[in-house]
Image (cartoon, rainbow over all chains, first blue to last red; front, side, top):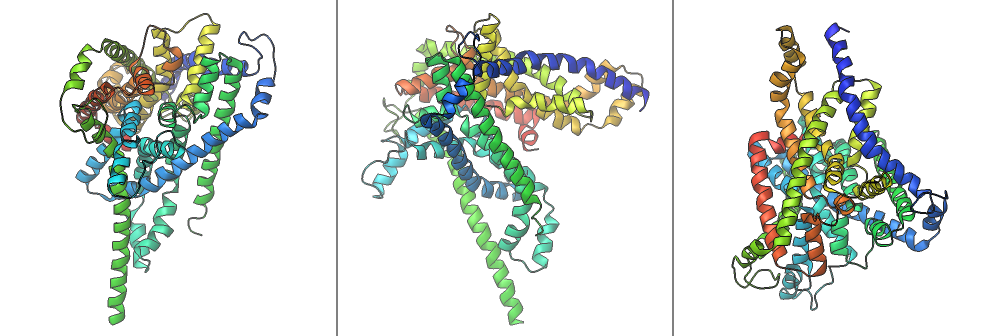
Length: 285
Length: 276
């Protein structure tokens, strides 16, 4: 190692230290308080107990909310993937101008306020909304569908709101795939569909997994969309935690719920990661 | 010969059906992605007092109504102030983080990297709640400075990510050349590194600004009673009574986003930085 390089390493520490202190003070310490609070009986942290976890895990009603939140995330992510994959495939094949335009249109929604995006769906899904009006005038339905305040509605809106999260990593992966591989597949006699299933799709698995992780994590924690589209009767974990923390002022229980929720989300992310690694081995199988 | 022709035709059909199926779904996806924004924009110009689409008549009455909506204006001003402070802090922390982490293969650098990026994966609502408990335990009640700190923790990783991507493209030879020509480390940083990674920092700063301006989960816990922020105020209006003014606010915010995005595209090549 040359002298300037080691000097650079030495000064890196001077930058790293304040950063580490910032993260310790404002990220690690709050999370430590969260975990500690979940192991206590009261807001003042006087009596230690595992009771909060027992209460949540022993109550079928609470467990169902957790389960429904995770299922909601899976459904919305799958819908995202169904719409997002072809869009990413198309955008990664488009010419430079078209590609720039598509990228702009894909990025714009993600930078627009989530409240605004969710609000526009209320205009669309309501009893007198565009969707019901169109379906009735086409004679497809007689009575307006109840889409607002239903799980179907929440899945649909989450899929739209988080769609760019899946499209962007997929586009990056798809455009990195060597086009010679598709040509080779075609030269060896495989049709476009066969080439897609056997070459393009397996090679794009890393991008799919990365996108699914981002979309899933965003869908399950989407407080604004879940509460506005789901209404007061469809309760998912973020609203449940908020109600317990602020409404009931039951910090230890809300903290235990937060910890369980975080572990559940991380577990799904871990499984997705494993799936990504597992399928990479099967590409040439 | 006939066989070859038949084969060629079948390949052609195969490719065409694929383009058709993928093209159809991609078109639906694009409409699905854009239509809500267009519909809310059109609805915001309605002359009626309902959110019916398409509107019976058009007017600017709901935009005019915004001029008298003092609560909404205060909330927007609060959000703007908080987002600007958050962006400044995020740029400092995110750039420093990127400089420390990129290029170093040391164990501690990778550990610091995952620590610095983890606010992006954890449920933000749990983090907001954790901050509320932490600050109240050390005797601080919700306030604007605490809110800015909370926003910064969840926003600076965006700056860090785009800056790391720019640093990866930076030729280390340029830095060595500058130093061997006698420039000090500080001078090299300001004169060589910053101009070359500036676009990455700017793109990240823009994303951090939008993320702070739109943040609900952290603000929900750290905003004090007097400081109402725009997204939460709008959330409450939509939850209680569907006021058509919300459509006008949405119209303003969409226009604001598009203008900022075009500026960020011009100056920082935003979509290239994100799509990387």
